[in-house]
Length: 511
View 1 (cartoon, rainbow, N blue to C red):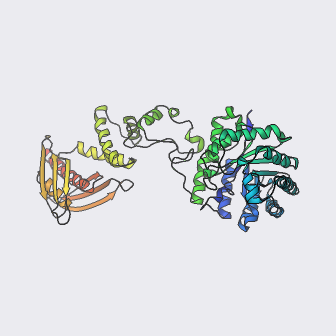
View 2 (cartoon, rainbow, N blue to C red):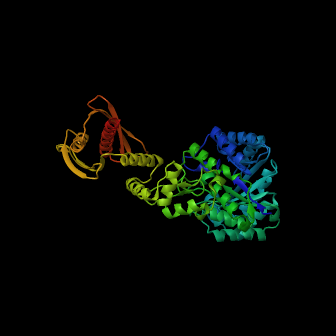
View 3 (cartoon, rainbow, N blue to C red):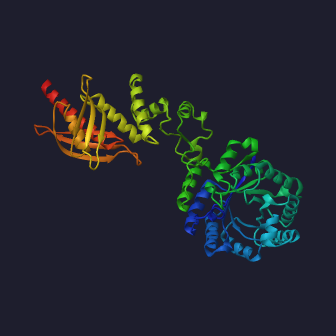
């Protein structure tokens, strides 16, 4: 059996310190409910002495959690901080006080203005003082990543001797390299007497983009608790992302001799919830929970994933609560991806037809960053209209402006395949295009209605034009056309309406 790694979530404390990410008590309770649902082991609910709001949040989350998890309150190594945390934690069935102080030369000299011996004494005292209130006391050695290792061993020894149940080794500034940080953890395991009876915790920051690597290196070298946040929220560049370390442990449990009890299908929901409440958007390429985490745009990747998901995905999207793998259609997509998506939409084509469909798809993809389902629907419907057409609009060029005269040059093929190139002017670009069409087609109608709408998303959306023309006998015929260029859409719609008029007339003659 692998070692159980305790997941200590500090989204509601350290994560909330991310600029712009503050939450009120009600919002914290909503997040806490999700953390409980996920099965985290410890929720750090706040810093009780910092504000009445934090005090109330710790109280309410302690009441909410019951026996589900440990609820923790942060303090400095100051008696009144510990008193305040103990008061807030009275509602918790499984309370923990998290207390400590800085241990690096910088913190001792510039922040605390104390000697090493004074630091050791404060460490011993704050743990002993907290033990008066609760059995479960966690000691943090702030900025341990930049501390002198021999001194760090002495400080942790003092905390363990005073009764700490957990010792937290933070890389507060995200300074360390993974191997060096792992060596720190191993050195503590090897040199602190009685540490085998205490949980070593790691709290790493992402200033150099290595928070997850640092945390996992800590686990490899004996840590049994990871302090982390949803989406990696936190001071500066953030903390270790809970979803990253949990899934890394799940994927490499045997190598790390580790497992967690987190319910991983809840990860995506938790990510979306925290993002929505804090207003802190998750970058699209964020590991595990980003919008593109299971999206494939390259044709080679798409082909591989469609044949076997694990060719390019190491995680099943369902394992993290994601909707599923997503094939992003773009100019880089190949035949396999387009055929697959069209099939899902209910469209199948013979091989000899598909090349034409793919070429039209590429024309659209070259004009848009991403081709959506609505684009495909429009493309197929437009093709079906063209296949059945008597007249087909092959090309259209329009010039207009002030003081230019609107002029349209159209290339139109008839049912015999003969191409006609015509030019006409009009009162506007649409009028000019329609008059150019009239020079070729065999019948004419009066424009009775003209409407435009965007049928896909984005500023580069495809626009669909619907026209209704009235024939000489009073019958009204509808035509639709779709294209990125609205004038082209208008001309296609007009030609399609005329085709329907001719087809109806021929049908009557056949009867």
